[in-house]
Length: 368
Length: 181
Image (cartoon, rainbow over all chains, first blue to last red; front, side):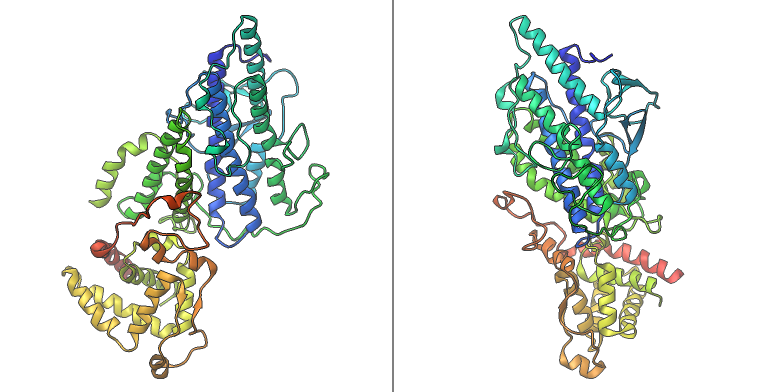
């Protein structure tokens, strides 16, 4: 079953899933990044920051792809932000992605997220069963028990889908690229965001966009650098793991650049996958309120991005300062000891959805 | 008073005198560093005296209007020749991340200590100074607010004035826990 995307609807749903997938990596990367104590681990901070920024670029590229074929990016759809830990595919098995502090274990998961890997045969989809409440990323839209073998296969299926559907449309004298060009986000609206953003308007630009996402993550066709001569995410994380930089012409797994050291102790140990319900709002109203208002601000931010991806790209310029605010708010939470959990710290819970509806009630309770 | 009690009382006192919530003090990431700074600069004994005096005032004014507590703080801590300069230094520490050498009259009366010199506690302490939050700005050269953000007016948080009163309840709760130990 290599022809997995045969309708325009399925392609749109896959691109929505791609946006969801690209976004889903951002909270874990940011949590690890801001758990590092200020002034320490400058190499690790730089590596994780670059990767996080490029994931934001990928999110935008996925929105461009969806807009190109007349889709409607919606980051406010319930379930867009997964409930952590979320499941991601990794060949025969899968793995959990958590919101956690920077550590050897967290880094191992990050490497799994970006690992270059494709299904050995033509079978891209594998069948898996999950409990209903589990967030499964890169599953086949509309058939949550079918999951792609790897993230690479997921994007390969999308590229095949574009090719097939455009060929079919062309044969009928049509095209699938019917999207409003003004909805395309280009570099002028995207400040220093980890790469060049070009409009997706035809099959060539669509292929380039997909390639950009795949190469920045996993490397170009087995190489460690992408076409812009930038190190792929997997190998950036590998550098942290090995405490040594890659340089051009290095083989995967054998960096020969300068060494550096990682201080694994200079980290605030947050409670992994903290939920708002783990914080007693009566005893710790300030902490509870800060965690709650982060979620609400983040939900508003996703609403703003949705507008930006639906014909108002200039809104992205305002989103930049907002992201710096998130850095400060997340840092504030991560440096607060978590009451009743000795030795563990708080963090942003990224519970986006029904939780904010109870905001008013929760505040009243906290004040009572 | 063990170090653990120290940090507990130090936080309660700092919350009272900085007018920031305890959450905000932890958020600076500087609690341990500042406690160590004060301890080194004035010694355990004087810091203990300051924190015990604060605890006593809280106990004895419990249930009374906050103006009573504030008046006694002013008289018995900020008006004290010994404790006043230390208390003021703790406020400055939170706001600018710098320990200022105590006045000559103070160390002539209460002893010279080698760590009582003017210094910025750390680069992070500079960036985490509460004064930046108080004025709704970012520390120059650190914590950049993002491209284009200068086009918007600063957003000054609403904590000034009587906000400190809202924390009285919490300070008392902490103090009771402290006594139970």
